[in-house]
Structures are given as structure tokens and as C-alpha cells.
Length: 633
Image (cartoon, rainbow, N blue to C red; front, side):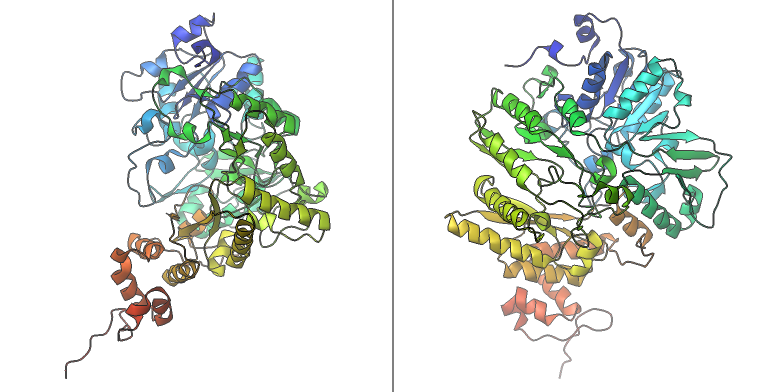
């Protein structure tokens, strides 16, 4: 049964009046369709404000190309406009790693493309500022969050300033926004001006800072503030951008971060520190809001792919301490885990079982990483001083509690809920965490039990994991464990399958053209995975996205923590040359791969990939890289 319109936040004036309202306090403009579910940011922020007593409307995917009626229909809200590009950066949503325009959009009804512009945060805020010059505009979501300081934009192939220099929002609420948005609303409701909100946690603001000395020669690190290299300095010197990033990442992963300052011409961008990690009570309160868990009735008869993926899933925590160098999760959610109570999770599971189309199978009981639930440092005083972005690299932190028993207990409770036939784990599993030997017999036994129950009870025939590469050099740059650990987990997977007479597959995920990866590394990956009898399916060419370590290396050519040069394939031909090795088993690629391996002087890899081809006589490559021709006699 589809809930009535009045069970949702209003999206039209008619729906607003049906609630008995004549105006609203906040209007949220989102680049995504409106799905009233805790996995969709606009719904979370809207419901959070609603619970605090504010009247909130949502305008999903407004038309920015007509007479702007979508932007006019609610008029000026009493407090502010909220603007978000949606659950993804718009450029990641719109373009492939090869910078080709995608033909679909998973967050739009029927996957229709073209429902949002490039950079919606900029476009929406510009329209709203022109129409309502005196109404505050708050930007949020992943696009604004990851572009809060100078950043490399892969799609324009240039360094861009803080998003606040390009858009007309008054401030950015970055990261997970429940606590921040309530504080902003409360302050504005109490009569404070938007220009006075300069030091709220987890916000980014424009300001003047005459008291800050411009130190172009080095970064200034104070007791509570860090002054980064200016945007102009970063434009002139890529090393300056690399040096900035180390501090940006460290403060994003600090329990008690410092304020970051960056000068852009005459304007200073101030990034206030993040809030402390949410408590269990706080995160429960967010997930326990009265979501319908459904798309708005305006989409009746249409399919929203992103919703289809998560409609029968439940998120059990936020945050990730993996610190993978190509991932934005910790920069947005933080590395400290905020876990829901078992009772809150079970309430949501019971809600899922009541859905009309639920057949007894939960698609995921997970989070940013599936198996970090209820994990944290043993001594939080040590965590409070730590600036490391990863608790797992280069090895598992000895202060980290890796006990999987709370998660096992949660799985057992979920599976005992009436109506649940089976729960699957669709989120990525960190096997370096579950395979870690602590020396504590009870914990190690529980972690082995977790791996075994994962394989026997929570896999729908295929378990996807992400070793990412086979080269130790590349994996070190990725902050991922050695591929030898994948071998260990694979052997465990096979033993469990054999013992339980299961015929399941382990599906690894790999990335090509990551910083540090050369063509020969991909050739070795192909040979290594062939020896495992794998025909790779889950593969991707590295896509630089704002505010990741990998992107900074890609753009600057330097590792921000060592300032040493790092090779990166940046030309399209070089990236294509790496990607082809994923498909060594496809006859269409054989001749090209064979020629490349001869050019690389690697007959050993040629023999491993194509034994028959390797038996043919050939000459070593010439200095130009082309195979030498036989001379006629």
C-alpha cells in the first residue's frame, strides 16, 4: 500500500496546504528524486528539521531551464533554503572515468539522464540568490562537502577554488548534517543573522581575516588553527596543493580537529572542525524518524534504480576507519564509527518486513564497510590524539578493538525477526579486519566465526571483496593490505564452501591506472588473477574525485605525506593500455596485449597469459618500443 501524500514532506504548494500550512520555514532543493528513506540526504535533513518543529518542503530535481517555476512555487521560506547536488558528486554522476557522458542516472525516475545540471550546488544557489537576495542559502551534500577547499576537478582538468567561491550559498554544512542543520535553524530562528554564523562546527564560511598573517613560504600550524597555502599559491605550485592536503585529511580524521584557513584573493575560507562522532542515542534518533522508506507518490509507476538497490536493506553504522586513499567516506562521515543500537536496527528490520513487496530477504545489513559495527579504540585518549587517516594501514592499530561479536549478535537478532528468511551482506567486507589475529583467543575465535557465518549464511552465491590490486607498491599507495591476504581469505572461503557443500564464488574488485600503477603492474595483475582462474568482472579505471589522497597524487605528482614524486598514468592512451589487461581472456585484446608484453620485455608474463603465443619467435623491442623486424637475407 502506498502512503498518502501527507505522509511525506510536501513537494508542491497543494501538498503544503493539505497539511494546513500557508508557508514553510525551510525549502530543500535536491538534485536527486525525493525518496523518503534514511539513505537519502534530503529526506534525512528534512525529517530532522521536522522533528525539531520546523515546516519543511522539498523540491526534488527542479527544472533550471524553464521559467524557474520550481524555484518560485514556495516563495521565500522563513529561515533558509537548503541546496544539495544529491547523494553523489554531480560530475561522478554524469561522467565516466573516460569523461564520457553517462546515458542514465540512478537517482532519477526511470534512470532518465538530464534531470540535473553539472554542479547543481552552483546552479541552484545562483538562481535562488537572484530570486531571493535576502534569504540565507545553506549548501550541503557530498558535492559541497568534498569541494570545501581548493580541489582538483578531473572533468575540467584544473584546480578549482573552494565551492563557496563559485557558488552563492552563504555557508556549507559539510559531512553528515543532522546536528549542524538544527543548530543553524535554531540560531536563525532566534534572530541571528546568517553573517554572524562564522564559527559553527562542521561549517565552511567566507570571511575576512586581517589578523591572519599571509605566510606564503610555509603552512602555519597553531594550537587551534592551521593556515594553508593560498589558492593562488596552489595554482602556481602543485607542491603547495599537495602540502595542504596532508593537513586537510588529518584534520578531517581527527576527533578534535583544528580550524582550517585558506586565502582566495581577498577572501578567506574558514573550515570549522567537525562535531564529535554521533553517540548511539543521536544516530538512533536520526534513523528512528518517521520515514515511509518509499519514493514520493509523484513517481508512481516509475523505477528509481538507487532506491531499488537499498529498499530492503538496513544501514547499521556510519564512519569508516579503513582510510583507503581513493575513498571519500572518511572525509564526509569521519573515521570514527557511530553505531546504532540493536533495538533501533531491529525496529527498522521489522518495518522492512511489513513492506508489500518484501519476500523475506534482506539485501544488506551493512554500512560504509560491512564489518566495522561497534568497533572503536580500546583507549579513547589515544584516539583523541591520533591524526592517522587509517586504523588498518600499514597494519591494524594495536589500540583498535576488532571484536566481531557485537556484529554476530546483531546478525543473529535480525535473522530471528519473524518474516526474515535470510539476510545478505551486500556492503564491502574488510577481510583484513576479520582475518586479523589479535592474540586474544576469544576475539580471534569470534572473528573466525564471523567469516564462516558470513560465507555460509549471508552470501547469495557470490561474495564481493575489494583487494583492488596485486602489486604491493600500488597497494601501499592505496592503503590496502598485501594481495597475499586475499590468497589467505580465498583459501578460507574455499575450505568453508567445501565443508558445507556450497558452490559459491568469491568476486574480487580491481582498479587500473591508480597512482603508482604502471602498465607492467597491470600485466602482472592479469597473470596473477589468471592463475586463480578468475575472469574479472568487477573492475574500474581510477577516477579522481575531489578530496582524496589518490586524487591529490594524480594531480600534483607528489605524495602529500612524503612529498616524493609518484608516477601516475594520466594520458587516455596510457590509461587504456592499463585497462586492457583486465580482459586478457577476450580474444579481441590478445594481439594488443601480446605486442605490449614484447615491448615491455616480459616474455615470462606472455608465457603465463598466452603459452602458445609465447612459443612463437620474437625479437626484443627496439629502444623506440616497437618490435624489431627480422632482416631479410
